[in-house]
Length: 159
Image 1 (cartoon, rainbow, N blue to C red):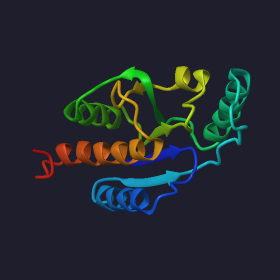
Image 2: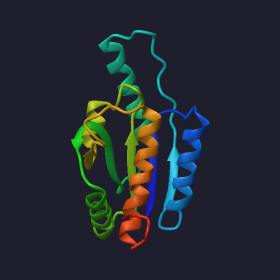
Image 3: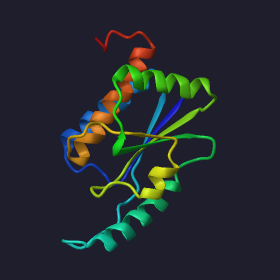
Image 4: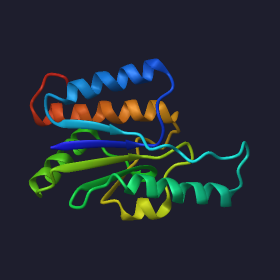
């Protein structure tokens, strides 16, 4: 299975990049992971809602360029469903059993994801009702996807 993390922008802090690289390496034992980092739209210091909505729509187009037909798309958003690590493993297994060879996890910019993009996703997941820094959320997502595949492969990682 191919697992794409389509996340707006590059990670600035080295420790986040190192953590993501470690989980990408670990995932490689189970799947073919890939990180795609479209550039976010530049916004003024204190953007109004119209400017944010326009930027999100432009970012959605940049993300859609990387979503291939017949792939399964997961939008990471606060209003998504919270699920356990075991439930994520079950969903990934089900996605593979349904014939999807590629899963895309979408991570928006600091303002989130475009509403239309979220509506078009096959699944919406929330990490938590809490708010996390964008970079940390990406690391947490990669860890959970690695954990899910570890569960599916009876690895000792998940306890």
